Image (spheres, rainbow, N blue to C red):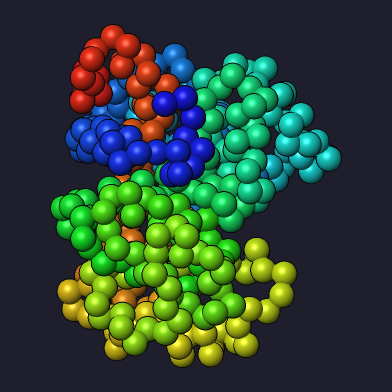
Length: 313
Ligand code: NCD
């Protein structure tokens, strides 16, 4: 695979291959020296035009654990503040000959655009409200570890679906892995036509108990240009996942950052049902799997007909 731009481009086989590699990398995190030479001599450029805690740190760690050289670039503090465009920034940094560029921007479609300006492999780390494919992959990985197969599982995605790239990528990935997906939120935060992605739509939590997995989303204020709910208090009254609404056998997920007291109550964030820190852990191995796939996977496929294990030695 040359780039990872969206879940839409992946088949179920692609997802399984990347996640099987991620699982094989799991063992590296338990070593004293958490490194394998798989990407030695390669350069990974992390280009972040938006705030990020989990995604940025885990891409950096993933590249370093594969022995790649890493250049971290954040738009704030760079020449972007002096008016340099995305294209000129990419062309400038391409002069450092990166093998892969991991990019997060507030613009839908930017990752695909960058792919047309450089020969580096592009990994989309979130483009506006379009897609966040590595988040979806790490969520599938977390659920495979927690539940085994996703086949026939019932997953509810609750909250601000309209402004969420995570929702879009996750609906597509969960469906490809055989799960049934329901999105739920106030009508103003559920985009019209979302059923076309293969999910059901609900506007209240009355049947939440039918879910095996409850996946809560943050209110994405930074992408709202008007008021979509009367108040956060009213939103929480109708849609907050709390101890009263979450059943004892349901798995609770959230991509982070959590706004405690809004989409989730503090008690459920801290409950054993929450796998939120497990999702963050999955982020490192899954991004190792993705970087390996775009930088070394193709070479592997040419030399070995059935690649299953990454070269760990
Ligand atoms: C998400 C994002 O930035 O898309 N966070 C993440 O990458 N883990 C979701 C969010 O910001 O709410």
